[in-house]
Image 1: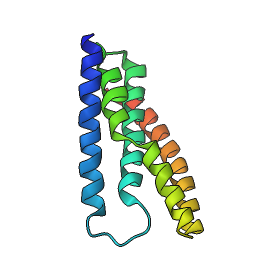
Image 2: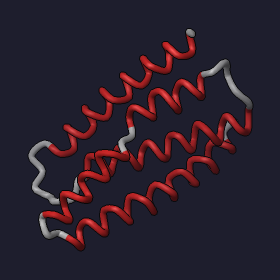
Image 3: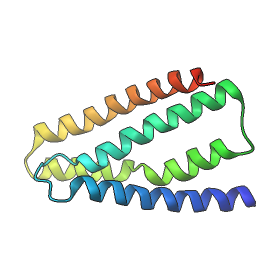
Length: 124
């Protein structure tokens, strides 16, 4: 029960961090590309890769990887918003930007996750 509560609280904190990062990056921006969501999702992939790589190489630490990964990073990242933004770009007639955004997020997310797994497994 404690693990569930900690995961829920971490999820709320992750959602609040996502809002702060997204707002800071998009304030006054004039680009059609949703850089806030892109940055949040790529950084979440990197952090989850680091966390997972470290946990796999060194073992679990009393539920901390689960709370941080599922809770905080689950609340921090946002696949749903990224999907809505891609569709919004398509509907606005920005097909090229939408394709670059959607495929770029996928590829950069995979690369960031792989880098995180590699580096996380090497950390002492």
